[in-house]
Amino acid sequence: MLAITRVISRRIHGKGGDVAVPKLSGFSIVSPKNVEVEYGDGSKFSFSSEFLRVHSPAADGKVRSIGGEKVISGRRYVGIMSAEPVGNYGVSV
Image (tube, rainbow, N blue to C red; front, top):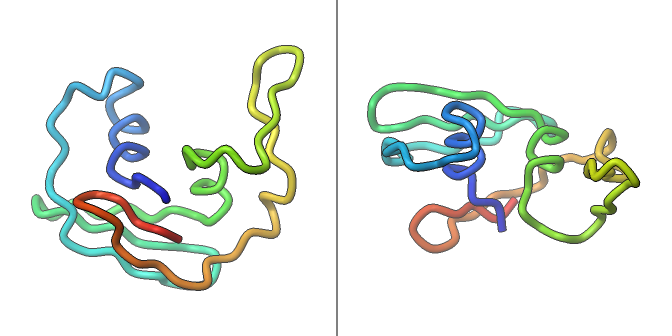
């Protein structure tokens, strides 16, 4: 599951996440490598599948290096096949 609102909030406002994020109003797969997210306030964001893979909270495929950075194998070859809503704010990609 990908909590897209959380990913966008952290990207825009930092790790704090204490800022109110507008309600998600649209999510579309633009190509197998890109998605577009639209919010109720009219803002739109485009994300690559590689970006979503790296910032996904899913644990599979993540390894911590000695320096503590996340190392994710195969992220360059990730494609988006489908997407469906999960709960109130999540999207399963």
